[in-house]
Length: 357
Image 1 (cartoon, rainbow, N blue to C red):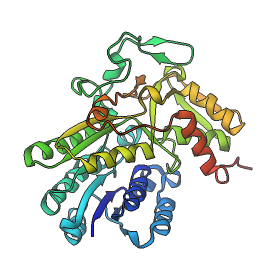
Image 2: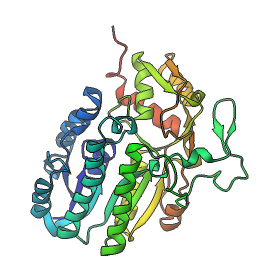
Image 3: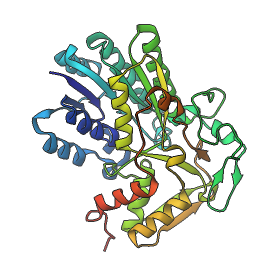
């Protein structure tokens, strides 16, 4: 039996990974204790996703409600499957820099300590398995805000002659910048994943994600930009928009495009790799632009509460360069752009996200 072990299997990327690798014929072992409910309340709970996953995959999926901070519990799972584990996709995390400031111990224990626990168990029990880590562009801290941005009507933008106009590369320094508590814990995890690749010769990759999105997102205010934005428009909720006149730019990549990238690495793994992962120039938007698209799709006007103060460490402009990954895996192609992503989120939730009476 060939096993794909997925942490955070109820989340956006985890659930997509479970379906994707089950589709490749692997037995999926999911690890998820729905800590998103603790982080974000009922809006963020992944219970619905886990129920759907079990129903859709049936006997191809085995679930373990283990906290990744629980070393003994985690080791029992790894010992059970051992060398049958063919790939580890580590997507469990505390994902919000706003939330992290409230409970720094919890954030670091989950993001840094939890990652170390998964890495060490992989080394002990399945060292040949490629290790795919969901990192974040927040490891660069607020350094992207030092770029010479130009203010346009609906967005901030880099001059076309800037070397990073096509996207920020992995060469950007992670030092001497404001990371947020969340960013710091993810830096620790990111560097540890690289170290296990170099020091122990494991085949590891850090995918530094921009806006990873799709219809499987549990849309909560502190996490899930495009999904939550669409939910607010559809339900008539007020969206709190923080700083930069709503012109901050994000690149967005659909979860299916993320998983085809993961599959490419799984099939031809390398050691201690770092890849930026986002929509690049193909798929990016400002908040203002995203609201306009969502309003057109939903046929409803957005309700926005603008807050002048930007969130600490938030990126004013971030577009990923996928050049390194595309050089290593030239057959990989991106298929979704922002309008396609928002329409799919709308269609997947049109019967669920309705205006409150």
